[in-house]
Length: 151
Ligand SMILES: [Zn+2]
Image 1 (cartoon, rainbow, N blue to C red):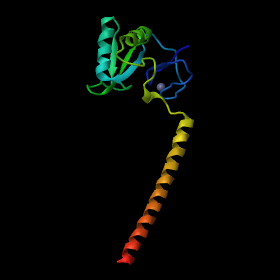
Image 2 (cartoon, protein in one colour; image 1 turned 180 degrees about the vertical axis):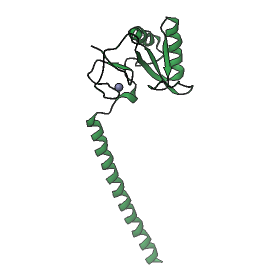
Image 3 (cartoon, helix red, strand yellow; image 1 turned 180 degrees about the horizontal axis):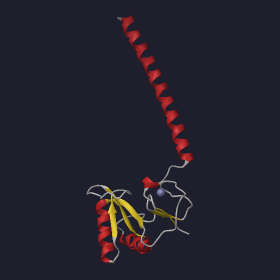
């Protein structure tokens, strides 16, 4: 069964919202605005026109809060839940936007494992950096000493 997050306006077949992780989800209503796809506003405008020609109304916003998307920016295209399946199919067939069914990458919450990996990785990088700095300054000091004593 599909569930709807009214905060992020996404549908999911999981228990929690893939965007905010909220578990207070409800069944989607036919009139609920649902995220169809996100991306470059110009591509979305082309999709918007295409859907309109097929009788599907969509909304183009800059974010989930409903701010209007301006040109040369990333935007999000929403359709009513009842049109979602058709709209997704039309969009996919049009080739205007790739990966229609996938959530935009900004929605992908980093898994805990991934986050831990990056924490450890950056820590290791940090120590390597310190080691390089210490080694380098040692070398520089040695070189300066040499130059001074030779003079
Ligand atoms: Zn959410």
